[in-house]
Amino acid sequence: MSHTDTPGHNAGTDLVTEASATSKNRTTMSTWTTRPETTQDVPAIREILLAAFPTAEEAGIVDALRADSKAWIEGLSMVATTPDGTPVGYALLTRCHVDGKPALALAPCAVLPSFQRTGAGSAAIRAALDVARAMGESLVLVLGHAAYYPRFGFVPASRYGIRAPFEVPDEAMMAMALDGTRPVPAGTIQYPAAFGV
Image (cartoon, rainbow, N blue to C red):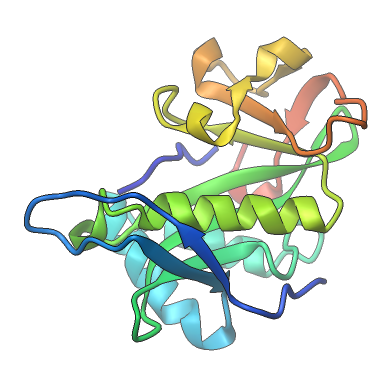
């Protein structure tokens, strides 16, 4: 399942995120263990992305982002795992900019098909946002489904005067201020080169 149209700090300890989940014939968990990815998780994350998206493009983007020291931020590539530690959900925050000022891009987000609608994706996203907030980040942007992302606190980016560098429906380009005491920059989003925009 993907929720995002894809356009050094380590948190250390695991985070347990509450997730309500009810789904017929699917694994249902009331809590998911979430944690930053480790080197050992890279193949599993690639498998999640390959299973969740119709092409290998998102997996390639994540590989390129890992190699981009200006975009990759340790601790903001988050997995949700089963009780045995197997990653099944994924959310990634990387450095982008709005009119030259630092922000984060949430993309991609994905869940293994057999674990969709169990809360694994929401748990990974919430954990990534919590770590970003704890790291002092102030703005997250996402291009995705307008019916999904508002549950995390996202609103249309246009409310802040933020726009994508390409044509996109207003309701699909969303932003969330993580720190209400800091001003939100207005302007055009500059994504890392890996996104190809």
